[in-house]
Length: 188
Image (cartoon, rainbow, N blue to C red):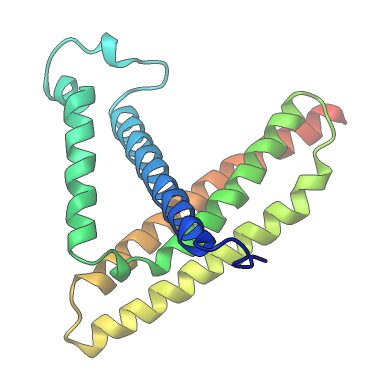
């Protein structure tokens, strides 16, 4: 794709590629930290409640933006320093599970709006079935490693997080299927 017609163009290109790569890393890190903070804060809130609604107590600390940011950054640093590769195996399945749940959310939203949502149902079912199966196999393999003895924290973390992802995905799928069923019954 590139030829060194102009002397020094490889070094210029190298600099631009390093700049692009570092910009991607920094924006991804910023986005991940911001989303982790938002999710951490919202975990402690009731539906419809905001951080400003909590006036005192331990929840006030948990929803504090500074505390939530510091906690997520510290946890991210600890994970990065202690081997994110030990849980990296879950990333692909979790990412694709998020895609399947996103398709489920769009399908239910379109159904609530009275629009055709059938084009989302087969890809959604495929994505969710494949990723839950992948997570189940990962958990099975990690339990085998733990049972063999000498496992560090990686297999334990993958097992716990994998089971949690499966459990939460099944809850969301049940709620989504119930919503889709209600929509179908309402049309009939």
